[in-house]
Amino acid sequence: MHSLPPEIQIAIFERLYKKDLASSALVCRAWRQVAWDHVRWQSCTIRLTGLLQVLFGENGSDSIDESDAKLSTSGSGRFLGLAAKVTSIRLDKALVNSLVRVLLEITSSAPSKVLFPALSALDCGGRPQDVLVSDLFTGSQIKRIFISGGERGETASASRRLLSSLFATQSQVQFVTADEMTWPGSGSPEFWQLPELVSFRYKGHLSPENWAEIIQKCPKLDSVTLEGTALGSEPPNLPSLSAPALRRLNMEAFKSLELTISILESTNMPRLTTLDLELRHRTLHDAPEHQCAPRARSAFGLLAERSQSLESLTLDTSIRLGVEILGAFRSLRKLDIVDRTPGCQLDDRDVKSLCLSLPSLRRFHLEYNLRLPRLLCEDDVKITPRSLGYFARHCTDLTYLGLPIAATNPEDFVGPVLAELVTFRGTLEYLALTPVTLFTGRAKDFASFLLIQCPKLTGLNIYLDIPDFWTADYGLDVIEQEIRDIYFNGQSAQ
Image (cartoon, rainbow, N blue to C red; front, side):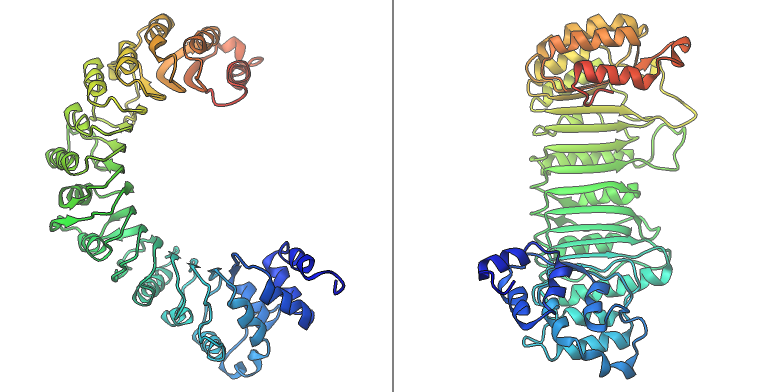
């Protein structure tokens, strides 16, 4: 090895895993010089236990206490050398205060007095950490923080305190993911001013005050994802807010209808391009419509006026918004709707109005999801094959179309569908037609003629109906695979 040219030695070392590279640095002074000083550590991701093994050996630090502090620093040079290279670390063990003090004492001997000078990403894991742990990252320029509250109350509480402490000392953070902060009584973290924050993903309890604080103190926010529910039972009352940089808002898994509507009403998002929402009340069963429905329609009207750059809207709703409101988003390119009872209940006339209002659509998907024990039946579907022609004629850039089609006799609908799809000849790539059910032979014929009409088609979703006497020898999976092999090169037909 010593006889090899330096550039060959460096090339060999750069092909090692980071843990093996750190071990190689312990062999001799020459190898250490190559590993630490010459190899380009473009990134170094490590678990805390792996880092501590460099300091305390293979047994780690499980038995350390304050009386062992002086004995435990024998490998501090190697430890500091590896810590200086770390760009991403996961805290996969809980650090007791005595161990944190040992690490801080070792840090004091580092040239820069910073334990992790290259650190850019911190994964706090799901272990309960003391707030003192945040002192280990003093001087680090962390850009990404991930923290999990875990499934136990003390873990969630400790994670909340640690997150608040990190926010107070790491004002340059740009990406934050706070997961499972939902333990009852644990509350929500205190949000500090993070002027550089661009992406925030939070799962847990959220109060109206939290939302206002996020928007007011994080002016560069580009993307927000909220999961969980509202904190407290009082009706939300939000002030007028402005989020000038916000482009993506995902509240598809946020379970508070009232707070969702309040956010839409109060927050001006002029640059918003992507919106994923759930607008339904989970305790509603057979009532005609929720009492918040008028506010929801008004909030969407405000949204259409303020967010004229919206290009993608995904909506899970039991509220009738109306095609006039949906059609007001003139710049939409993607519209996905999960329609729950009582929902939108679109018919051919509604589809024609949407197509005329949204000529830039490239993807449209409508799905009915009715509450049990009601199942989807022919009377629930009011869209006929005629609507396919509206999309073909008015949305000329459409490549993906998912539409529930009404057909009293599915065998008779094939001809009208193919006739309406002629205009799609140059664009359509994916077609989903439900709840239409075709017998196996007709499904193969349909796929064959459809590909003649739409040569760019790479995906087809229809239901297949197999007579009982075929089931034993010729199962559904065999039929599906045949259609994939014959028409889609083994890919995405369903």
